[in-house]
Image 1: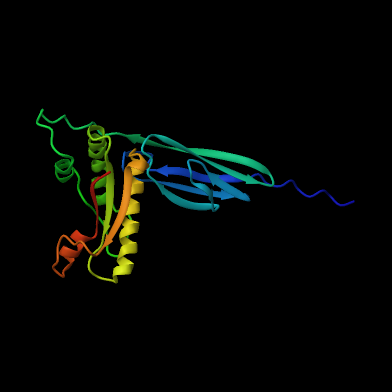
Image 2: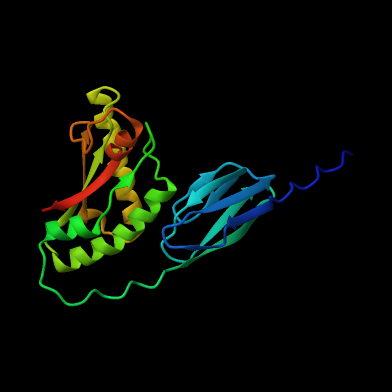
Amino acid sequence: MTAPPPPAKAPTIGQFTAEPASIERGQAATLRWSVTDATSVTIDQGIGTVQGSGNRQVFPSNTTTYRLTASGAGGNTSASATVNVTVPPPPPPPPPQNRTSITDRFEKEIGDALFDYDSSDIREDARSVLTRNSDALKGILHDFPASAIVVEGHCDERGSAEYNLGLGDRRATAAKEFLTQLGIAPDKLKTISYGKERPVCTDSNEACWQRNRRAHFGAGQ
């Protein structure tokens, strides 16, 4: 009589970590994991199904615990990793002054997020700009509740008009999604791409092109 087959192995989670485990709001943490003997691996908080090993950048706006669940013929197992998010203290309030227009507020308080050539990825300096912008935009929306924010995507002069319209749209969308993670209501953010049609600098050199590769912000209705 043949011996019964050995029982199926339960999934094993070799690693599930968040690095770094503590960040300031607007910074990124990287989830890393490795799982064996699993037929399905998922991570909650909107990440979903993943490969048995890998990594993923996350940008939580508040302290967040991510749970990895591994399922297989031998059962289920899970592990968790927490990213602690600290919020820098707000700057002291400005001295009382006459109410300014919303256009003046945008010009004085909101900066452009710059991009690398042919890219819509949010780089480190743009994260810092967008994090500062999010606080200022919340104040502007509080003072002008009927207004919306227009996120403009711009490109340098290289490439076709059609290609740059698409690239500008991806840049505006990336900036919008980042601001949404920082608590700006999505219905208050509208995107538009101007491609290469509205440069702020017209010299043909890298310093000028860099100024034109940007997400710019303005007031809308």
